[in-house]
Image (tube, rainbow, N blue to C red):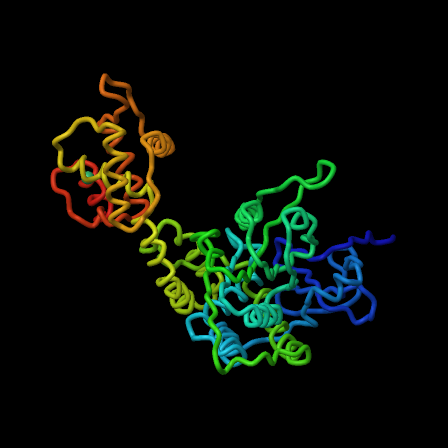
Length: 429
Ligand SMILES: [Zn+2]
């Protein structure tokens, strides 16, 4: 009987068996496969499991040269020691501060578990010095899973990437056009397919890091992304020659592959409380915590690295038009003097508050009307124009939004408000 042969770039079976790509010994453009049975790894050009023979796909020569694969797997001491060694890499080679180095290590470890995480780890790197940015991408390429460095990707070329190899994309972009930003955001969520050529579907889910010279990259990609700003240092001299990169990769890739083999099935186990983060940062915090299932203490420490970034997000709330609308309605509702609010009056108040906070944009009553629509707050016509009825439904919508975004107004204890009473009762349960 001949066994059937399957061309595969990686498999994960229900019994814990896994198949992984490793760099080939054949000298051809064909990787080898590593078969993990839950405790032991074997490597070969072909591996057998359950009567099936598996073989890696042949890669285009240019792709074969560009993508980095581990050569094998090797045991590591502990998650914490591996994390510390990776942090040290960024400090030593690029002279980056410890928080930034920690975050970079965290992103790199996350790339090894990305296929089991709810959202793909994404990293936005900004900084004025292109050389430093490129060196950082090079160093990341030594420690990320199936890393692929690319420059100036367009929205069109993004759809034709070799996603079947589950690459970690390390992108060097002069600027980030809006259509690419949208693709970027969509591809960090699992199961969101994009249309490819001739009716085919493309799954672009996977980890990505972007270096973009302008600071706008972080803002453009918002709260679900790890932000790292790299500033030039007098100690950094570009020394990341190819030989150094290969040495680093040879040292770390086998240990990181073992980290993946041991932890991939356990990512859901990490129970870290992320409720104190803003709505926008919460998912990212949860994703980072999930990357350390074997060390809950480390997961907790890593999540705290996002605090400064989360403070930025909260600062942006105070200049955000939707948050400001809610803040004003919250105040009026709790004063209890008005049953209705005219939309043009609301727009006036919103603009005054935003100007006081340094915002230069001015919003029309129509614009405020659209915001209210998106918040599910109905407007009614009256003799004096469009207005909102501050009934129970509106008040509930205002409370829900204010609490979801943890707006500053919710910190004040409001007595005699049924919605605030309800929230307090839910917390003390
Ligand atoms: Zn209330």
